Amino acid sequence: MIPYFHIPALQLGPVTIYPFGILAALAVISGIWYSYRIAAREFHSGETLLDMAPWFLFFGFISAHVASIIFYFPGALHQQGYWTLLNFTSGLSSFGGLFGGVLGAYIFIHRHRLPLLPWLDVLARGFSLAYVFGRTGCSIAHDHPGLPTTFFLAMDYPARDGFPAGPRHDLGFYDLLFWFVLFLMFRRLGRRRRPDGFYLGLMILAYCPIRFGLDFLRTNDLAYFALTFAQWSCIATLPAGIWLLWRAVSRPYFSYPPPENGEVSQSDLQSKIKR
Image (cartoon, rainbow, N blue to C red; front, top):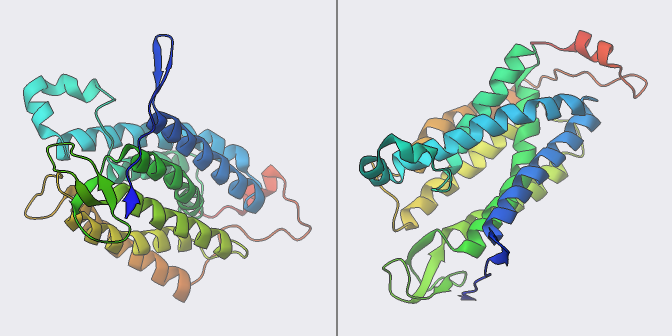
């Protein structure tokens, strides 16, 4: 059993800095930084990633917030009206952020006539590191308590949120373990080039079954026809992951041919891009 711990907020005059907020900021920074490194090394186009970042961040953040309110806290919407959608401190949905981020990236990629799957692969790899920091924030906030258990990775929760004290599943911590392992796996797989769509397909195929099962251990998430919003998202997303990974393995395709002399100019790069 893991002892329950609490990291207090830091008060700097009128400003309160919460550990979760610091880790959320580190998640954004690390994800962009890691994606930039991959794009610069493999596509010789790190600046493109930086230009894309505001698009997937804006759409991802808005979608994560809206999905959280609608599917997890609809009572706030009924009580406070649509103004609660402007309260961006009320929660974020991971799948909502994922869907919105992909939409924002797609809009940018389509507008600039870039190949879709290679850039989504870059974001998937960056997302794996970002989620390590993001779920670390969830772990230290202990904001995803699960069912009581005697599992050796259980968190010894105090009495809180209407639940009695005792060991419980900490779903944020379990997610942290998954994303840490996936990040290490992606780093190892990144030692050689992979076909378009490989990383995105692998991420979906690995995460969806695990997240689907873990959500049965949650205690306070609303269910729709016996399943949570995240579980329905897993069902909707999993076929895409299977198709992407099957396509990458059975019909490998590379939108960016490797440069003959190790260097590629921006004009040469654009001439090689396939939609």
